Image (tube, rainbow, N blue to C red; front, side, top):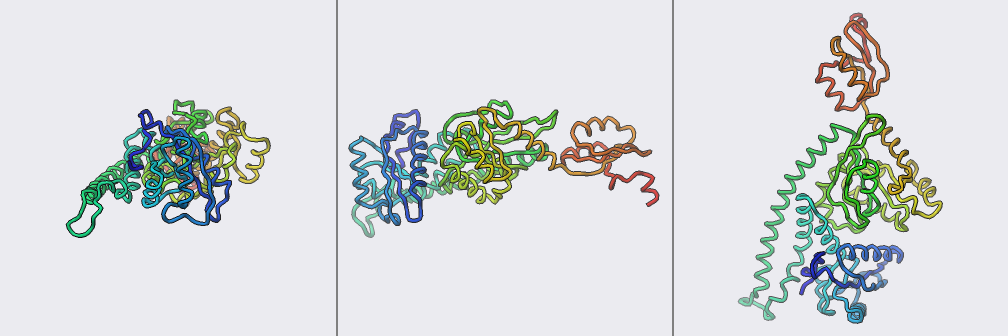
Amino acid sequence: MSSQETFFYTGNEKAREKAILVGTVLSGQEREEEEDNLRELSMLARTAGAKVLGSVLQSRQSPDVSTFIGSGKVEEVKQLCLDREANLILFDHDLSPVQARNIEKQTGINVADRTELILDIFALRARSKQARLQVELAQLEYLRPRLRRMWEHLSRQAGGIGSRGPGETQIEVDRRRLGEKVTYLRRELEHLAKISETKAKKRRQEAYTVALVGYTNVGKSTLMKALTGSDVFVEDALFATLDATTRRLTLGDSEELLITDTVGFIRKLPHHLVESFKATLSEVREADLLLHIADLSSPAMERQIAAVDEVLGDMDVDPASALRLFNKSDEAEEGRANWALRHWPGSLAISAKAGEGLDDLRGELLSRRRKSFRETFLRVPMGMERLSAVIYRDCEVLDVSYDELGAIYHLRLPELVLGKLLAEGVQHCPEGQTEGEGAEA
């Protein structure tokens, strides 16, 4: 049985996979980093429904071409699997189709790598049509070079003209069908992406928009729920949220903004997955402000921040433009919050769960929202005094004066409010010029 038939399918008999984890410290890599990766791989495995029975960690200069870890280490892993009755070997590094095939032949045990595992979790968690299509496309792109491994058991031993086996024929059929399916999925996602981008742009026109980004399971959804009081799904698990969720947040007396929760990032996030989810992550590119949430209690926090910054860079988003929030300050060791705030000036330490620091965050959001306003002079003509109430409600009034044509307001206001006022008949008034001054000019 190929590893493509060993997806975990939570809720099914196959959810009872018993796994041995395999990590490799390569040249130039710190052992501590790979130990963190293995702990994360263990969490990923449990999220997918597998039971982790043990792990193996080795050091080597470079991957073995045939088996990644070398034949001797493969035998060691095989024996560990037999001793603990494991039926799955999970590699922290991505394996080539040849490497996976060779390891399965040598051990007789199913093999999966980190990318395969993450894709499977995304498939389990996807809820919306767009998320499901995105995951399916990423899975097919991952599967494309691995078809031969899946069908090798149907191929003939003999070679040469006239000896084309059913396995090879099936590979060609599957490749053609896979290519057709990929083309279809891309067309569907392009259509959905246009709809998503239109909605995102409309939201940005309607209000100041904020997007939450961060490593998976750092508390983004918990923060969104704490700020907005909404019923967003919260779970202490990796990739609890895949679909972007937007809620309205009221600041001050009546000033509002829109806040969007996005999919969590992770180290070694599969390239196909990043490409597929770019439509969902358009919320990140279109937002007026990014809140980059980090887990202050995690010993791997700095590496997690770097992983998120790398993905943002891949999306042509400047990581430095984000406001960093160090969450779970109540769970972090003493002094760590002060260290983080010194290391990342301008950031904030909060606890979304305990409610600590949220008032400071609301104040910062309100300040940034106001700074994003446009400053201008508008004249409200005589007879349209009802619009003055709208101005005082939705704008920051810096000054007001009067002439025979009406009231002249010096305002700081959002572009959307400006457009609505102009549509109602309010007029631009260059530099607050009064009617008398205009006549003299």
